[in-house]
Length: 355
Image (cartoon, rainbow, N blue to C red; front, side, top):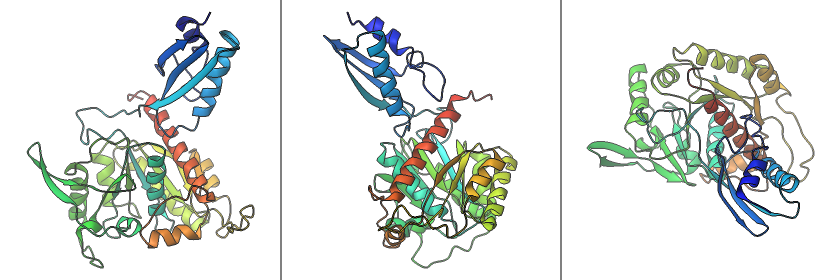
């Protein structure tokens, strides 16, 4: 006879691969119902972008068939509660995780990575915001085809900017406040003040992930964010060649020396290879090969993704219609990358804050 007790006992044998504890003790099983030979329940994931959900589903079905009833009809649903280590009293109260995307140098496609990471996480079902923190060279207005200023509203006695929205992503950039072609000629203190305003004086609302597209280099903006805001972790973007790796190493060092150590989530290699659309099985390594893996090994950070060159992506970005083609090798690479990032964030949040 199928009962809730013996189903839960069986599910307590299923181990969450990353957290190394069973699903029942982790509180990941909800809405368990039994009607005759049909068992239905929900697995509550730590992120909607979980790359292991199919593995857990299969393990649950097998456990029930093996330990309860081999003829049971098992229906597994998914929901998610994105984890966080941020306290409710901290700034940006509705933002569960802040992810910084850095490179140490320009020209490696950092903004492309940040933008598509945000889009991929949103397509997985997460609530996402994207802050263009590159004050001198904002890219987000062009990539999303936006040329308007954000609205100001008074909320709970405070005058706050309302982020613009596209592709379901909340967006903010200094480029929304400037005329096309206008240069930002500010010294360091003004830049730091602007970044603090973009973080503190914006109605970001309820977000699972706020992505920060950082500028090249290792300067005032990076230090301001690292020291004054609780960043969940940073991603390091590189391309395969040594000239990019040299500056990526500096970015890694900067986060460790910024005065408030920012955890490093991993490395992503952009422009890894080129595959013609009519010959997707072929790979041409235009900028060398293995640079991201090399940086990953020497820095003891996971390699979270290898993103190919894709001509249609360039055209989409220039035309302000940034979106992931669901059938392209580029989309597959970025979906895998986004899931790996979400996984690293969940792992980071599982470690006690005192550690």
